[in-house]
Picture 1: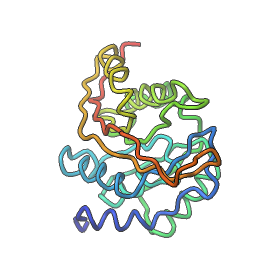
Picture 2 (picture 1 turned 60 degrees about the horizontal axis):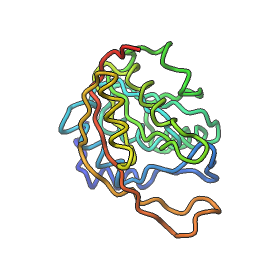
Picture 3 (picture 1 turned 180 degrees about the horizontal axis):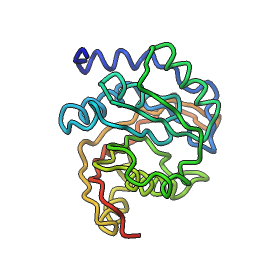
Picture 4 (picture 1 turned 60 degrees about the vertical axis):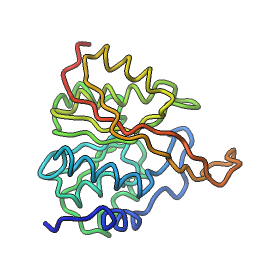
Length: 214
């Protein structure tokens, strides 16, 4: 497989179709191509956790992280999302890119952990941040991801929640490493958004997967 450079990967991801009518209750915000490319390129080149690996993408939405992982040579990438409309766009994206190493599952991510213990080498996700009506959802996603992964979990979280996440990682006896501090350019997606875009400080974090004690 041809080795993609960072700019080439980002250019490809700019062609990925995203939400037509995002749903506030599901906190549907697309992962920006630049952030997705930087995340995946680092996971691939620094940690070797994508090529020929089994990848899970939790809350995959329209498939930005799954598609990028497939382009970087994942053995198999499976996207999980509760929303049929998002998965329909995801499926269209897969067909447009003619990718064969991606599957998708419609399900509630919060109910996955018991049936998928240590099923994937790597879990990559941009989970709901747990705002509005979904308080604590980010931690539910993270705990599920850690139970599903054999090696590592890579995730985005609001920098303001770092102390809380570190506390939970210590409690679960999981090593947590902040790989980068990013600015998430969040475009106006809902009626209550008054600005065209807002920059949110976000941590890109690697968690070394280990069986949780509870």
